[in-house]
Length: 510
Figure 1 (cartoon, rainbow, N blue to C red):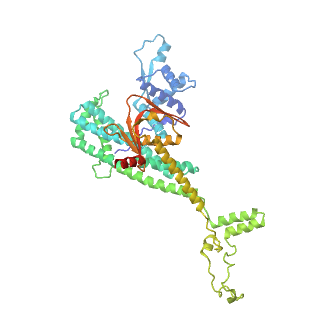
Figure 2 (cartoon, rainbow, N blue to C red; figure 1 turned 180 degrees about the vertical axis):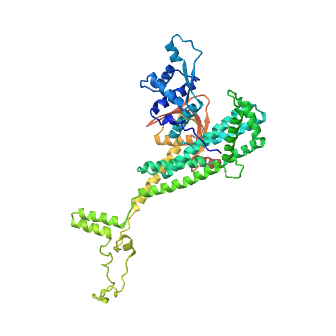
């Protein structure tokens, strides 16, 4: 590849004296080109410069001098406007000359705009771009088989734009990532947050990246099987390039298409057997995750206070110097060094007369130390056994209360025993305790599925009470009064049977 040679005067306008004026003039021409105005007179140029924010007063001589300087750098061209009718000589001098950007001027201003956009862009790793490349390759295969040349050109252009976005965003993001890996900041909280978010971002991007790369590579192979040269020839026919100058634009256009297709190959399906760049991107991402996690570990460790014996002794000395009371100083000493009296020193031998009072500790027989003394600092104390509490009265009271509760429960069930089918509204007024029993039975019945006749059945947990609930279709409402309020709801035909009645019925049948 030939080295890139930039004309020496191409970007001189951005660094020379009065560079702000030169940049504003080129900006005004660029805004005019956006509106398909390729040539501007002095008055039109001044108006355009005001619209883009040039507020300084500018004489005609200064503006013409700036245009002449840009002409000397081959950025601006001047032509005569022969299509106008001029009424005076001053009008002819003012409106005859028309200025426009040269091709080099358009490239120079576009380069400045691109440089400024790169400075403010952060770059990104976007799985949506990879999916868009795979989709466009699939569309391209379909258009090559049954589409028109124009569709082949448009789909190929979209594919190239997505690849360019992938390359640009990846380069920008990788640059930011490498700077982040080398960065250090005084604000550890912000530093930790940014790097943790970057790890999560990379992990999300790397998910299914290999699968996306294989999908794109398979579709690139399919296009290669169709023929890249034929693809470019069809796209060239669909591009409908005009031949405005003496040179034929088609060879340069084809060279550009071939170069961009080589970029697609390099990223996903290189023919020389080298690793695809998408795999290199995955490798860089995984290495960055490992590095960032290591940095985060170091940041976490650095947040913890470093401790050393020297620092601890200095802090302890500072405490000793500020505590005024002698007893507090002794307590601090005992707490810091644990050099208090031994807790077992007061223990004596079971027969002290067998051990001389002058015998050394080494010669004296050992004394048994309680395990409780080791764990809690206290020894066992053997005293009289405590009196056993007489719980006869408590057991009698509990038995009496249980008998009373069973009697009350049986009385409630006997009261609810309907002896046959009755309406729910027939209960009228009930004690609140009996009403709670009835409500529990109704809930059990309504929670069960109806049988073929539409009846619902429910029973208590012990099976001693059963309820049979049948709906009424007359639309009546039941109203039950209790000491705590009134219950209203749909009326039902119900029958409550207790175990006592069932046993009486069975004995009577016998």
